[in-house]
Length: 330
Figure (spheres, rainbow, N blue to C red):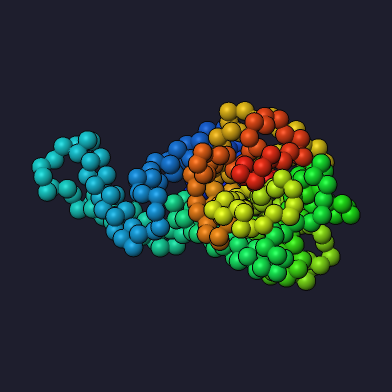
């Protein structure tokens, strides 16, 4: 028999409320227990009508539409089991549907912000607001530094992937956006963590601690990728309409420690950022506007914002040949 905690895990997993770690636990449970697999199947069947709704912000009439759909499903199921004359549906069946509808109404009123389509749009817009706020800080920084993008002094042959490294010489591209916090051009460290990214809850960087570091103390404290330039400094005006930041680059999700070895394959070449469950990524462009793109390509000709042109193997020190080749990492 499954415990109440295991049943709750299955329910949360069905509503996509679990973190990646908890989702993995749920999948293991489903694969190892017939009872869990049966419950999961029943939950999927019960929630299936909601999958037909458009992927859009929660409509005001969702509850009514859901109850109506339940009524139609109930009528169809009864007609399949026992054909009856039109309009002769027994009151007992109406009572059953009414009871189900009451439960659905309660669930909808309490849980609707957690349904996948509503959560996706909510987190997408929060993420956009965060990037727009960071973009405002970038604009103020550039205004005070002769139009140049934030960039620490570094040797272009040095690595750019060692997020959290606090050594004297920069080895992380995230040191550049960290200047916005360190110099006071942005005051909310939490804005650098995309709310659409499913990860373990971490202790966020307090604004009072910012001055102690030269980079984000860990990769979990920044879930965005920043533009890597050919050679600093680069003026913001030269990048008009080009991407500056985006949800984290999917190529480098598995990088660990000081070493990086990534070979571009068909999957890595087409996978969107994992921040929004591979549905796309928000991108901050020079000029301050933010767009949610379902493709990784921008501009004419189309260019992948997460790769360097003609580079297949990445070791963490690659740079584009010119500023017309946008590359956002890590």
